[in-house]
Structures are given as C-alpha cells and as structure tokens.
Image 1 (cartoon, rainbow, N blue to C red):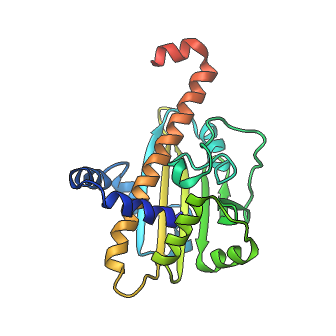
Image 2 (cartoon, rainbow, N blue to C red):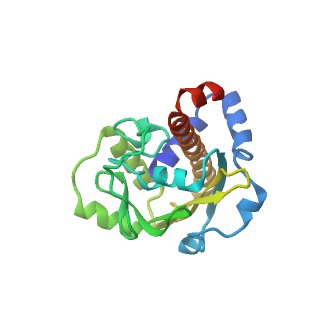
Length: 244
C-alpha cells in the first residue's frame, strides 16, 4: 500500500502546477468530517504513536450488510482494491461480489502483491475490518515468498524500500455505520508511523498524505459505484430507469 501511495503522490506532485493546486485544495476537504476525524475508531490502538493519519468517509445508498461483502473480498489476486488498478493490480478490480472468494478471518493476509500484504487484525461482520502491516511482517513475507510480481507491483515495492527504508507500522481500518436513511457511512482511516531517512521526513510526510488521499478517494468512489450498480441490478430495469 505505502509504496504505491508514495509513488502516486510523487507522480502527481510533479504534474502541472495548476492541477496540483486544485487537487491539493480538495485533499483538505474531500470526504472529511470533523467528528469522524477526531473520534476513536477500531484499529487506532495498533499504531498509537502514528505520525500520519488520514480519515475519509463516503455515504452509500445501501445498508451495511450490503456493503460488507465488497470489503471482505478485497485484495490482490482477489477482487482487487477498487482504486487505480494500473498501480494496484494486474487486472481490473471486480465489479461483482464473488462467492468463490473465501471469506477471511483474523490472522489471514489480505494481499497487496503475490508475496504478502496486510494482516487482518479485527473483523466485526457488517461493522469493521482492520488491517495491519509493519516492517517485521513485510520482511518476513519477503523471505518466505520469492515469486516475482508484475512490473508495476515490483516497481512500487522498490520505491517503498527506498522511500520508507527504516522501521514502519501502519493500520488501515474500514468502518461501516448505518445512517437514518437506511444507508451506510463508510469511513476509512489510515494510521502510519514511518522511520524515514535523515532529513527526508519533511518531504515524505506531505507526499504520503497526498498519496493516501488520491488512492483512498478513488477506492471510496469505486466502492460506491459497485454498491450502486448492484442495487440497480437487484431492483431490475425499472429501478435502473428511475435512477438514471
């Protein structure tokens, strides 16, 4: 996750100045709710000393039980991450809920590449999914699995090693909260502590934050698109016509 986040942030930061200013303005506000940003969420205790925290949310027109299956099938080689597949995946993220993808349990790995990924630390069905990664886990996975990934995954991995070279720990939480209208508020929170090369912290922190925003925003929108299309399909042609 963090290799691609830093890579995306760097690429976008090097783009046209006007476009960067617009995106940076949205970075401060998109999906941000003051209450959500300050209150405790599942998984916060995993990286208590986080130096970077991003919290974003989106409203979904479906109850939590209809959103939950999209979360638990995520992962590289599974349904994907519903974000920028050219960076995350070797193929497009799924647009259907697949019964063939095994439901994970605490302790399972939700892959980010062929050799490993985030460890699932908590599952509250229909409520919360909490993922975790640190340097020790990443190093162990690297020694246990030597199969090469596709070029894009290898590239982000190498960038991660160069940019975040030291110790790190990160949690990634997905929280579903029912709304009064019968829908769901999906909240994502990323917390990270990174030991960066001397003198690089001031440079990497904004790059990290912006990269998180870019990937998280696309993922939240991707989930909303999939939830909406599923409900239209279940409602039949008349529902689709009415919503168009």
